[in-house]
Every structure is written in C-alpha cells, then in structure tokens.
Amino acid sequence: MIRKFLQSTARKMGRHYNYDVSYMHGLIDISPAAAIGLARLPKFYKYRGPAAGQAAWTGALLASTLEGDCGPCAQLVVDMALEGGADPACLQACAEGRPQEAGAIGLGFRFAMMAITGDPRADDLRREIESEFGKKAAVSCAFAAASGRIYPVLKRGLGHGQACQRLDFGGKVVKLAA
Image (cartoon, rainbow, N blue to C red; front, side, top):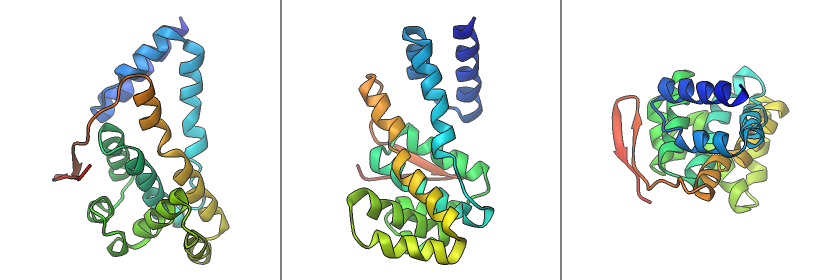
C-alpha cells in the first residue's frame, strides 16, 4: 500500500515538472523507508525565511544544485524557481557565471558558492543578506547552500547520474559548460 502511494506521488511530480523520476521508483522498490526519508528532505532545504528574501534563497539553491549537477536536477530547480516567479534572466545570468548581474538571486548564488568552497568572503555576503533581508533570510540561504547538492549526489550514487545538458530558462535554452 505504501509503495503504491509513494509511486503515485513520484509519478505526479515527474509529470508536473517533466522530470525523470526513475531513480525514485527504484528507491521505492528497494526500500519504502529510504523513499520516505528522501521525501522528508524538502522540509530541510525548503526553509525559505521571509518572503523578502526569497530571491536570495532561490539563488543559493540554484548555486548549490549547479555545483553538484548541471543536468536534470538543475533544470528542476530552474523550473521550480520559474514557477515561483523568479526572473529567468537572473537565473540564466547566475548559471552562466554572471551572478553579479542578477540582483538578489545573484547575491544568494554568490553566497552559496562561497560557502560551498569555504571562501571567507561568504561571511561578508551573509552579512549583506542579513542587512537586506534579515537573519532568517541568511539562515534560509545557508540551508539552501548546504542542500542543493543532495539530489545530484544521491542520484549518481544510485546509478542515475546524468550528463550536463542544456537548461531552459523560461524559453531561452542555454548550453552550460560542464
């Protein structure tokens, strides 16, 4: 019964985002308990803080995901961001290595990349996020920076890694360098 429910939920998500959920189906077949654990992950990374800081959170999640993958997981993050109202040009600028041109999305993106690489300048960007959007926004960006790589790494570990691809930013398709 639980397997059927989990399979149905995965199929629905896959259809909604045109996303290959075969790794989810495989995981459900092997271990429903593991699949339930996977289903809990969004509660961690989707802590978004205040509405004013949503763009910075989006940029941080995109950076973390792109750092781990430039394939289907990155496209899923882009699609979800666009569905949430993110500016496609700002998302594209970040993905193309021009986050300084992407406003608050770029601020979150730069913060996440620096936090991931251990760059001490991440503290300056965290303070900038706090100053502009509040401490809760900085916390949400830290959560996003830490979590975006979970799915790409998990998928590769399960044998479902994908090569880099073109990303679609609301109708503008761009080939990213690996």
